Length: 109
Image (cartoon, rainbow, N blue to C red; front, side, top):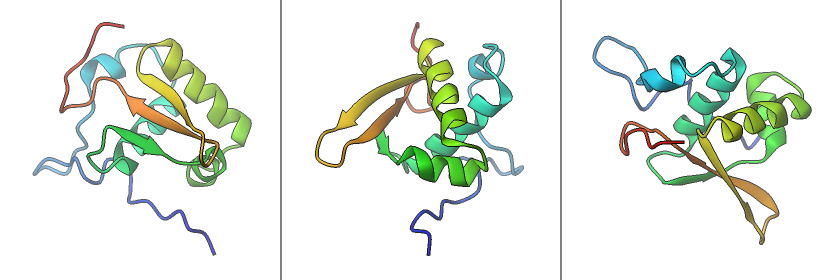
């Protein structure tokens, strides 16, 4: 049984017309569509918190890709300035902070 059951992409940030709220700068930044989907997934999972902690294998299952693909998407978002990464030393799991969420506005990379 999987412990990882997130809501659909952008489920918390949907306007009355049923559209997810995504920073325009992120869409036009040149990151791959797969990295964009990862960013949206992390944004959904953080549930209003500044940081989200989720194992890479759970992200891979949710996105239906390999763990290595998730690692590439994470690196792409980090290198483009859309993601900060920290390590939870207790669980040895990565923690992710999204840059440019609708609450904080886009910061310079």
